Image (cartoon, rainbow, N blue to C red; front, side, top):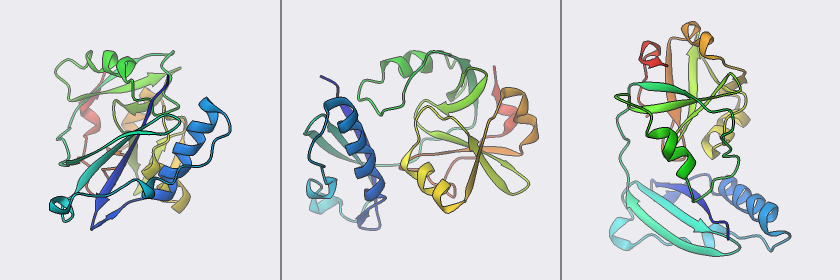
Length: 199
């Protein structure tokens, strides 16, 4: 049976973007398992007392129902270089718990810190986050990411990021790249020099 993940940021004594996580979780469950009563993730979340003042990565594994919840201390992984990898068949529209296809691509990174996946000629995501690119003080994201993360979804709704088709040959137009996901904001993302994104 399919299993999926919601990765939720716990910071400043509260869970971030729960509404968006609930929406994605229940949209996924409906797609794979048919009509189901909605899950409200907040009903299942309870941070251990000794971790309540920390920044935590909360991982919820679910299918029709919640399977497991884990809380771990979080620190951003340093990242400053990306190797572009072409895969026209990769599919990660839903946040599967089984990430074996992404892991196989990640193993091709060589001495780079991570991979930047190019699908059908267009830039998408790295192995664990959405990508954004800066030009003239405007942030742009790939129009067709592999997975629309909750933070990206929020930024798009707020108008902080503009989606646009991005090809590898467009990269010199930008001054820098960053990554965003449930745990990483624009402000605390590592800066990735465009010169360090290569095939």
